[in-house]
Length: 138
Image 1 (cartoon, rainbow, N blue to C red):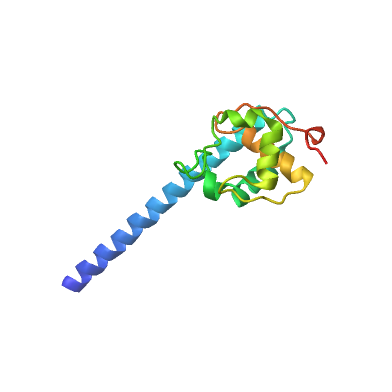
Image 2: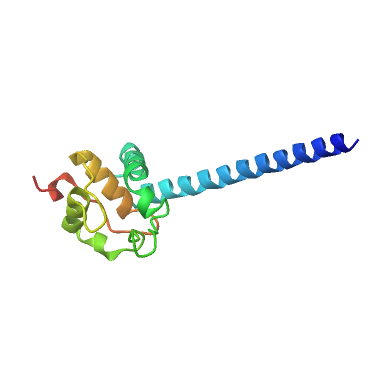
């Protein structure tokens, strides 16, 4: 009888953990969708593929340090959310391509660079506007 009760308790615990993990996943997806919607609303080009590409590039290259929320990590990695440095297009481009401080250079082609910067500039409440290929010096 004790073995049956223990088995039932273990199954209930596993079920609760499973349901909890599903709810966390749904909340995470909702936050990611909100970020994409914010970016589409703020992005003057409103090009869905450009925004989604920028979001993917950010996730692959930037989010580990600057976080999915753009809030950074204390004093080590600066927040990109509400960071006025993003107003300076040339400084932003230079920082990504050459690195700065603890940040290593990120090797992106021109279109990828435009996508990721426009994603950053138009997310998390940022409204720093888009860059175009004319902003990128050869």
